[in-house]
Image (cartoon, rainbow, N blue to C red; front, side, top):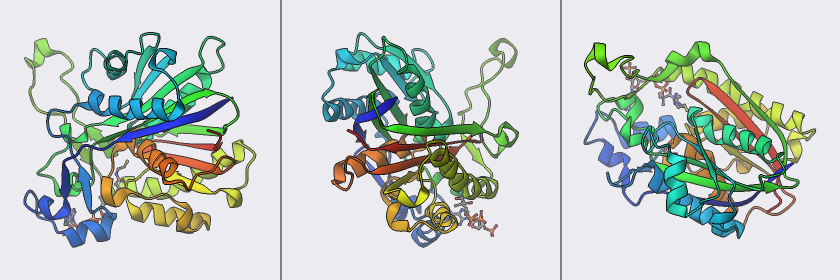
Length: 321
Ligand SMILES: CC(C)(COP(=O)(O)OP(=O)(O)OC[C@H]1O[C@@H](n2cnc3c(N)ncnc32)[C@H](O)[C@@H]1OP(=O)(O)O)[C@@H](O)C(=O)NCCC(=O)NCCS
């Protein structure tokens, strides 16, 4: 029994338009808009790291929820681009928030990270001693983006989103899963296994992607995961008021809308301004929807994501803030 009681998000100030991208790789604004729906993305200024973005989003979520930092029992940060490997990003954010009573855990399920975070939080909230959990998705993907590879660099952006969860009626059904056999479709080069042998590689860990394979996986899994979560929560697809999908490609969202026979009006879309922000994407979109005034208590929502792993997951909930 868990519900979302507040949301927050943050996008770095620096905006990189498709036109600017043309200066770095052989691409055009027209190609990017037509193939992805993306017009611009926000990038870190090089000073703001993953924990800094996540901290601002978390602060906004706590304010929205009316919860003090000391009241947070757990901080879960979903990220593929941690602030540092040690300490984890959640401990960094705990320190900045002054959330001294919180346990701190990072998790990585790539672009499905926020959904996995909600699933873990829902389980933790069954414990008597845990009452408030901050689930944060935060990414500085520009750390691992290859700005010489036009097939990937146009897709990604930086940002953070957060939600505060408490006990109560809200989340009705969650599903998650992964197909590890498809891991190579979207991966970064491994760290050296043993620095003593490899003498310490300084090569950056950049994203490599088989876009077509990921696309095929996504157009199938997005509707299937969404249906499964609604079924688990004994709901009805036709009664959904809003769907907040992972923002990877507008064509993937449009294909899901068609396959599910659910109007595009019900899908929240902000990809034109954010690009794909991985773990942060669904959390940012949910916060924008929450602050738009279009979300009312009693509304039925589905959040759905997919990404590296390849992972997937969906949450079906009633808004009860
Ligand atoms: C990446 C993606 C946008 C590519 O779109 P696509 O329609 O499949 O395009 P293709 O890969 O078939 O490429 C078509 C052509 O455009 C070219 N191209 C690729 N990126 C380009 C760019 N940024 N600008 C211009 N041309 C580009 C390709 O080189 C190819 O040229 P060729 O036909 O001469 O070989 C699409 O596959 C996709 O969105 N996949 C899913 C990715 C995703 O969601 N990843 C994150 C998961 S969380």
